[in-house]
Length: 98
Image 1 (tube, one colour):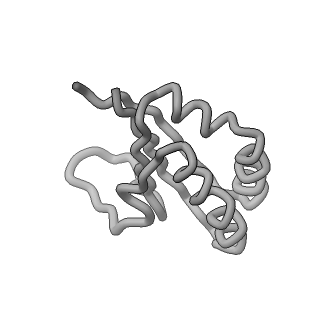
Image 2 (image 1 turned 45 degrees about the vertical axis):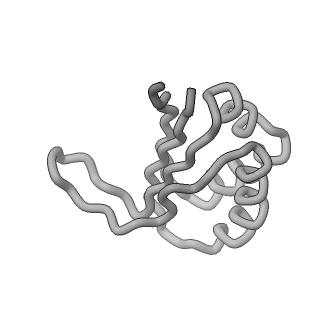
């Protein structure tokens, strides 16, 4: 069953992003992932939660593959880079349906 990674980011500066995307985007593709949203002009329809500065939605073949990508040792330094860059990031995993 398809699984999705949904991320909402609050970003103060984007200095980290070039290095992050250079590693992350090919790694996502290697795991069969496909970006459906990257950035995006988000707005509210309902609720009070901030929409964030950027939204990402990545489709993976299944939950196991998504988790394998997230736990890949080549991705670990990119997670740390994002955190050290002061990015407030909320990531969710959501299963699709048959």
